[in-house]
Image (tube, rainbow, N blue to C red; front, side, top):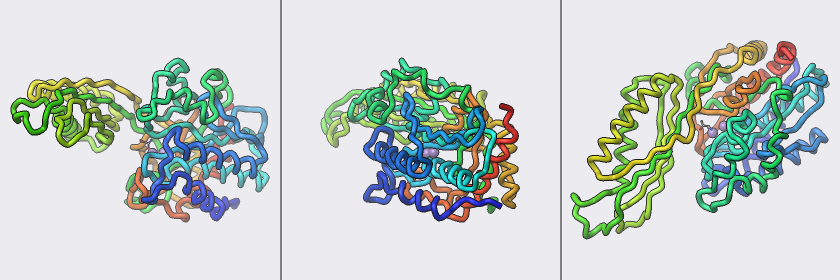
Length: 416
Ligand code: HGY
Ligand code: MN
Ligand code: MN
């Protein structure tokens, strides 16, 4: 039975994992950062050295490595993203790109001929980032963002326009029509760490993803009145930060009342103005992130939040402005890819369980244009989006071998 080279894969995970490493041992590799640039360079050099091919960088700066190991058909695309959250781990995203790379290297080394060409992709800006748009590269691919919308986004600290950021990364939004389309991509398979504890609980190293959760995000700005922190009586204040705190707690209460273990919500970003010890805050902005797949419950949630926010405005004399910045429905994975992944897992001697992904992934967007699926690797202690993120080499090896098989099965099963 053909096997991938786990030593090589682990070495690559370690090498890429040094790019953007900070003093605390976490990774800072946000869209457009110097580390993003360096990670791209690392991948391109590695792909050039191993595959003797140049990377194609599309209009939104997604990186594509095409390997003509099949007939002139639509490609089987494997990959993920190389950017990270602030102080993140070295597996989220990077593992998927490097596992795709390892699977393709093995297929070429072992001279396994396929009917379909293979492509590795590393998507641009999958994670939330200072430009305010996540899964950017796969949104562009799926037609979920248009060229003319790109210029509406600016880096919240440097004020760089997103189009200019993309240009720094080797993209060019003027070449929008050259982003690969449906006629090129036959199927997409992404490996990712589970980022939860369910595989640990099941005592399994890998699983096949059935559905990717819906994600709903709002930017919420609470406006009050700045004033002196010492001289303003408690009853005379319009404190934006306290209003924001009440909104965040109200959202938590609404979500708990929905009584559904597949609904979770977080306020993970907050900016307080003017943010000084002796000034009552006059403007507090937060981002609410809710994972919710049931559309009816989403409407109920919105209604309940509206009601509670009105009451908070009245009580505190503040104004709350909310804008929906992401409203992505749940996305089932394609049957043909689920079957291939399940069989691939079975052929490596493991039980092919299916899991819902509670994290968002590029596969959710790619599913709008091609058969898409995912395979998960067990996360130790369920940790992710933190430096403690870890998966064992044994589990990674099991996943890569299952993926190698899944690719060959998919190659047989794909309609075109
Ligand atoms: O936020 C997410 O679910 C993913 O990690 N991008
Ligand atoms: Mn992530
Ligand atoms: Mn990820």
